[in-house]
Image 1 (cartoon, rainbow, N blue to C red):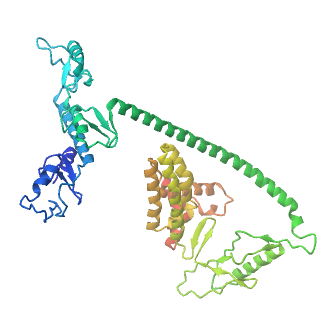
Image 2 (image 1 turned 60 degrees about the vertical axis):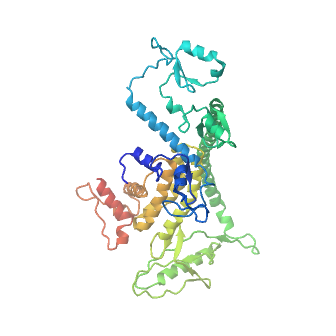
Image 3 (image 1 turned 180 degrees about the horizontal axis):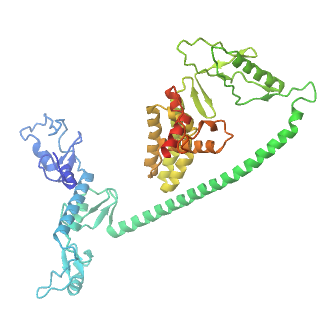
Length: 493
């Protein structure tokens, strides 16, 4: 069934499949389908008085144990009541003139007098004279009166057509006197409107105070963190400068022990030897490793061979096996991937391992972003938190590896950004856009620094507007930083 208007679609969803009218006392069968209580009772075969044949759902034909134990679906009934009230209000607004209509007293016969109040229980509008007489009768003193209005049915119970005077805190719905007497809300917390309004106001004020205090606390912590970071950086620079001075002054004293019976041992951390093997000649590479080991011995540095790794990148079709490197008689372990300066490098120069590590670490940070969102922090604070703790992880050394990432790796990275964007409720830059900006920024620094080793790769053409493109024999090099940076510079010019 195709319905053009949303309100028609909603009315269709709230209609009983049997009578095709809005649900009246809706009940839910065990299979999940809803029907009017009167309609579902009519579907039971009246000839089966023994109860041996169980009734079936009219839609899915699933058996259910009869209608005696079916409970009214109060949530669905509340939705229907609100829908009826809203639809009635919209119809009344469409029929009346845009200007405010004057309400007259229903008790004045000779001439029309403007009404000052409307009694919801009597459903009449009264002028000041008749309102005074209305209050003089003890029976009418408890009737609820409101400002003059013609929309009496909107404020009446959609089921019993009586004034709404109570509020059920459990079902969050308005009730009339008959609703309360029927007993469906007997064990619920039923209050009069004034008490319910006061309790809701107090609850909202208490909640607002908690949120405000949490917001102030979080903003104070963020400000203190920023101040501490600046102080730590300044102190760190002074400590590094002082440490270098001290190390230079005592370096000669610690190279050799004063007493021959003592031994001084230093450990070398993060020392890397990169060798290019041509024509299958590994002699120069192995000699360099031996010289490094000898230099460590001369300077009392101890190489931990158990933590030393060897990574070989070899794209030859008929690659010969490489014998392992030995340092002091111990073979160095050969690995397929290695973490170097925070980046996971694989022997096939693919970046799936590196991207997987970054995505996993970023997902852990998303938990904290969700926690801040639950405390109702502003979108600006959430975006700043994302840039500091998540974006910084996803874009670490991005100019090195992003160009040769596979499509699936890029999608995995961007999914993290989209998730963070939904949590923060504000737009966030895509990983690809950040990569382009970083490439342009890094290329600009190299161009401005003539002493940079790669400065010569960025040469201008005779026109002085564009840079000379770099030739690449492989897709891997074509997608790497330098050719990509040249292309971005030329496209921006």
